Amino acid sequence: MTAKPEPGVFMWKGSTIRTIGELTDAVATITSREEGVEFMAAYFAVNVHAAENVGYVAGYHDAETRHRIHEFTDTAHPIFGRGDPTPEEAFDAGRRVVEQDRWK
Image 1 (cartoon, rainbow, N blue to C red):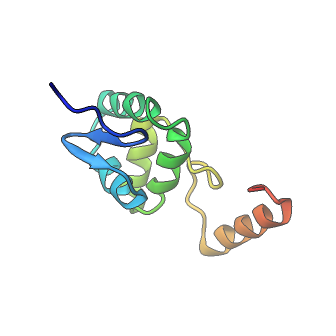
Image 2 (tube, rainbow, N blue to C red):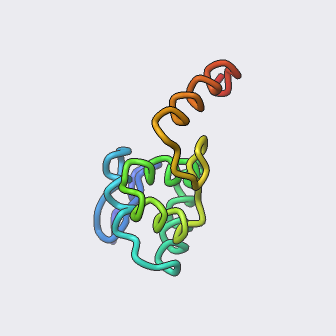
């Protein structure tokens, strides 16, 4: 009998993904659109915020990897979309989020 994973725990390619760091590493391994669709379906099954999370963590990667992750998983960063903001644009976007009280 196979043990069921604990609620909210995501398994991918034999690895348990519990943290944002583990998710960041896992999405970097996606190498095709088909694999991205499979990844997102499995992640949505345990986390309704899968698209936002994947879109967000893709931002921790270099531009080439980030664009690949967004394309293969059909996601976007929750604030920057699929763009490549300059540091000034990123700062301004963060300020707008705070001013709009978006996260409350």
